Length: 261
Image 1 (cartoon, rainbow, N blue to C red):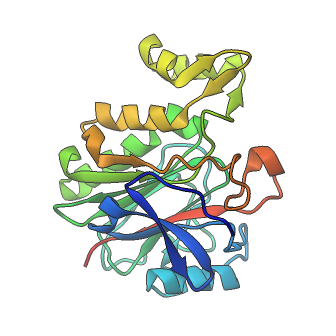
Image 2 (image 1 turned 90 degrees about the vertical axis):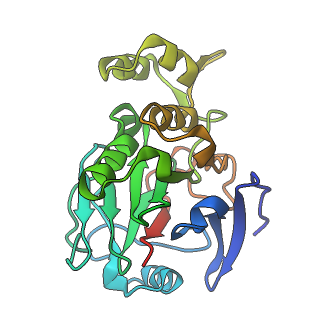
């Protein structure tokens, strides 16, 4: 697999199963990674016990049963995983699109094949969050809902967060319809913000990266502490899966993070 160049905040790492992506500033606060298509992860009922998930558990240094997954539904529901509890079961998993935890024995998993995986860690407290932000989740401010859950449960201050946005479809490739502009307006996003996120040319395109950065900045996270991988899943099919390019049967990438002990 040929690996593309990355922004300075990101680097490629070598796992037993192949290349993974890591954000350097986030790594100072939490063990995490973003997978590539070198790792096959089965999804759906009965996916527990799959070899790909076992390999990922080894990379995150947790038992496979502590890889905590969700039935992602493109909403803003957050599952709280406190230390000492069993948290989100692997099968069946709860319906939600974000997880937060202070448990260093659990790894929080977000899956996607174009949607933005958002990982965050509190540099002061060591608590972490993972959020799944496609267009619906971005419109619903799912990443901000995860931030709010960190604050409400453990007292996280936005200025203490470091955030990484992993591989996802970029504004170069995300062609959308006019209905999405209306959906964002209906969700309360004002025209100046929408004008930054939607670009009109020969077609209409949506920039999920800028939208999520803007929303987190508005919630108080310093812009310099939010890092975007800039790796478009639709452009980099050698490394990534893309629902838009390959259809519903394609694989899934994962963003995974663990709280600091």
